[in-house]
Image 1 (cartoon, helix red, strand yellow):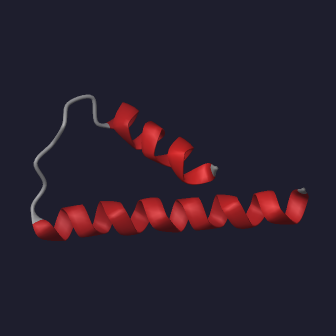
Image 2 (cartoon, one colour):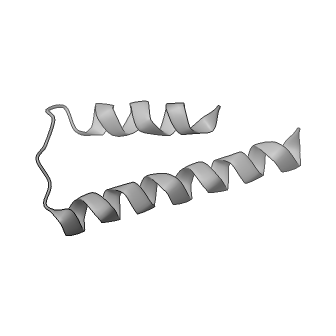
Image 3 (tube, one colour):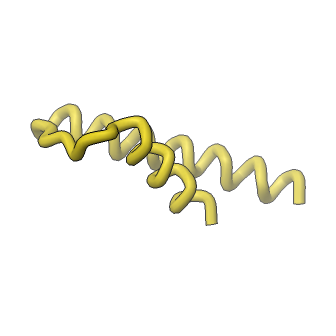
Length: 47
């Protein structure tokens, strides 16, 4: 449920579709994963 919101927010931050090299793409993917994981955990605890 949360990962879709994180991905859509990431799309809004990058108004154009960037072509990232391997390292920045991996960093962006890792950041999205960690944000999704943190928000999912918070949702689990609160609900």
